[in-house]
Image 1: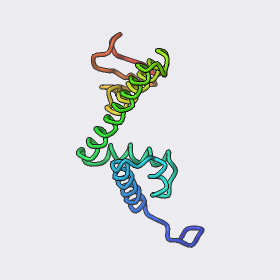
Image 2: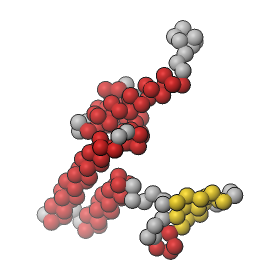
Image 3: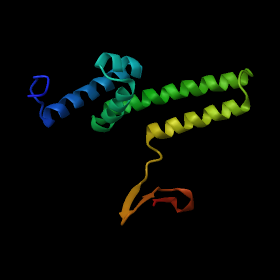
Length: 143
């Protein structure tokens, strides 16, 4: 029994509840709900809702995760189109336009996992990350 008198949950029960919450979070995000709305629906915080969706995309069947990636990619396309229109109308400067474009590109690369290392090696106290097709040999070492 816990301090509150409720039975203590096993790790398996907790893992199952977490998995189910993540699946619900993913379904709500696919239904175009914001992370704040997802958090309210599931009784969590917005950062937890974000992490749940991200983890569900890793854990779940490929099809729903691919659908969400496509949806998020379309959202980024819309943001980019609005950015281009704002620049064309003179509502933002070239610097603002460029900054926004770089942020959209970064978000898209993260969404698609383009910057993940292709290979991770641990050599003693060093972690070596290697990327395919990267300039400068494509390695980074953490000391």
